[in-house]
Length: 76
Image (cartoon, rainbow, N blue to C red; front, side):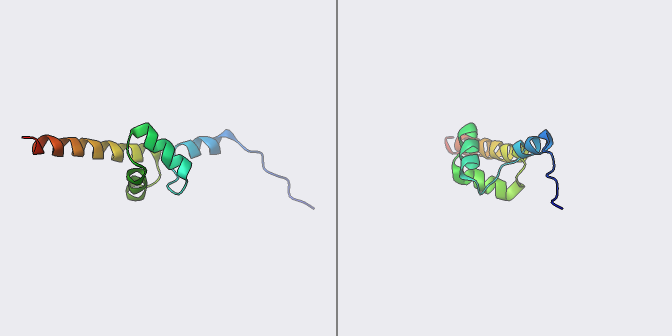
């Protein structure tokens, strides 16, 4: 007797939206375009903090702030 296919729920799709797949070029590209950072920065952030979209965006924000601080100190 064949197994009956499970009904798909919206829960899986919502959980997937909360993650960034570092190996998927289209997801890395989307996050790169959204945050204004390079693709390599996004991949490094995913590797460093995991694939949670909130954590990746937070890490990229931290990088931006740190770079601004460094530039400001260098211009003095």
